[in-house]
Amino acid sequence: MTGNIAIAGAALGATIALGLIGLKACEAVGRNPGASGKVLVQSLLISALAEGALIITILLGKA
Image (cartoon, rainbow, N blue to C red; front, top):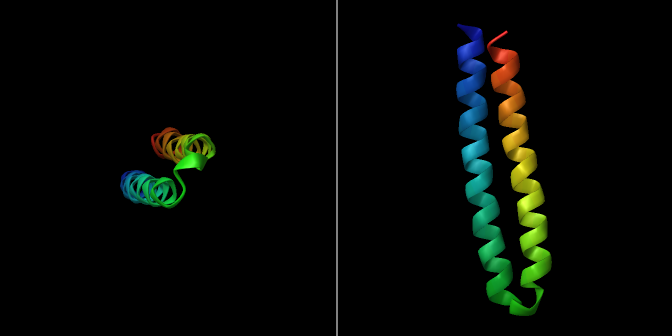
C-alpha cells in the first residue's frame, strides 16, 4: 500500500513540476524571444530530471 501512495505522490509532483516548467519557459520566451534557445535547453533538462525522479520512484515503489 505504501508503494502505491509513493507512486501517486511522485506522479502528482512530476505533473505539477512539468506544468510549472512549461509556464515559466513560456513567460521567459515572451519576455526575451532572443533567449528561446537557452530557455528550451534548460527546460528540456529540468523536464528530464523531473521525469527521471518519477521513473525511479515507480521502480522503487514496485519493489
